[in-house]
Length: 232
Image (tube, rainbow, N blue to C red; front, side, top):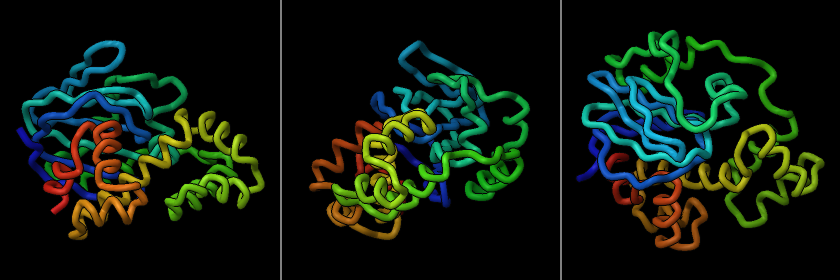
């Protein structure tokens, strides 16, 4: 069974609305918000199975989605203010989204509007990240080469090991996981623009299409071909 629905990309998020299907247990750097308008969504994690109309999954937490109806799935980059607010210092694994936040979501609105309205209604804390880490992530968002982390560290006056430690401390995930997430996000944007699987893999900096496929299964639980069908 295949995923069916619509996929959209925002400045710091990726969103899907439709029917979920096969997905293996996976873990990604993004904070995940999964909402169901016509029932409950179930997510299996390392510490058990959780069900509800709206569930949060912490960055880096292994999970697999099981849903029978239409869902809205939002993946938010962990350094964004909204992700820092929703995850907070206590979110571990999977948790119910508080009802006060679920009430802010208009699932009847078009997908992009639904997401933007939610992000616009939730207050954001400041400052969010160490300024050096924030600057390094901006560098890494534009550089997919093997030496990208070392260059980003040098640009902000940190050693590579210190930058990696700072990322783990502030984001709650290894920097390598964030870099891999951004590579997949770049590949997804390429696919939505009409690129072939091989072209998307090359543009995102993967060694080859097989590497692209293995990584996407590990991080998103689906194949690039499935993502390609949702992106068109």
